[in-house]
Amino acid sequence: MTGFGEARTQTDRLAAEVEVRAVNNRHLKVTVRGTDPYPMFEAEVEKVVRKHVHRGTITIHVRVARQAGGVDLALNTAALAAYLRQVRLACEEAGTPEYVGPLLSGVLALPGVAPEGRSPGSPPPDEWPVVEQTLTAAFTNLNEMRREEGKAMAAELLALHGTITGELAAIRTLLPTVTSDYRTRLLERVRQAVGDSGVAIHPEHIVREVALFSDRTDVAEEVTRLSAHLDQFAELVRKGDEAGRKLEFLIQEIGRETNTLGSKAGDVAISRHVFEIKSALEKVRELALNVE
Image (cartoon, rainbow, N blue to C red; front, top):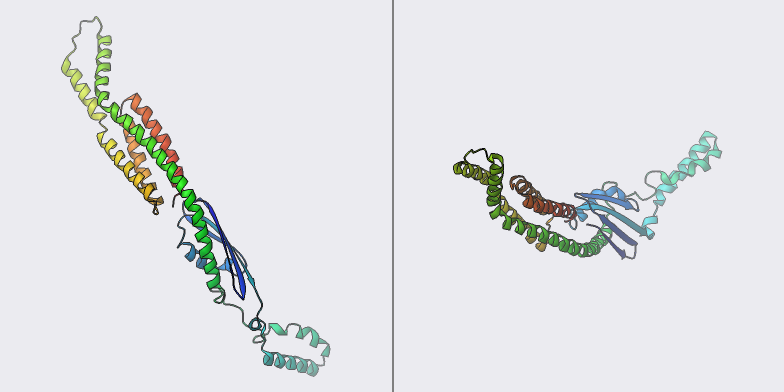
């Protein structure tokens, strides 16, 4: 399901902004972009995503504006002074005072002078709670939009369910006449073939052939199972609680029963209705791939 959600959080130390975009995908795929270091923590972000979304291609933009604080700018002045003295002393003893300036330009990078950077293994502990809160709010807004789309998809799925149910009802009305129509056609063909040849038509032969045809084309079980699957389908759509995977399974079963029904029916009129069921079922299958 598609959707868009955004949220912002402002504290005295930072401003966090999160945008979430979702497009249809049968599986869950998460991509994180934005302010460093959050693109490196896709796994941590995905843990939050899975609490709200289970399917779709999710693109997340995280933007963090940090306000410099005194603690962020604190230097180890004792270590800095010691490095400066040692650099000057070393250059004087070596007789190369001209190297003092270039060497001192990199003194801030020496160990212990500047505050240590954040650990690369996890999100910044002082920022992550704010970003996580903002991420959760963005997904709440995303799901509001997805719920509206879900209502429209549910209405379409139920409309297609009505189409399939109507075609199945038409097939039910035709089933009692299939055998008798075949018997009539068979008798007519035999009479035309025999004609004036004087060959006798044995009723038991006709009865045997009709009985074999009736056994081959008996689709009562398929119709019953198909009807049960359609009832489950409508119930799942109306319930709407993580129905995507279950719908896909039911659609496979409906398709299997429909194919068997079409191959066994042995009647042109029934085949037309089977074709309409398959056409509607293909639309259902495409929609169901986007249902969570």
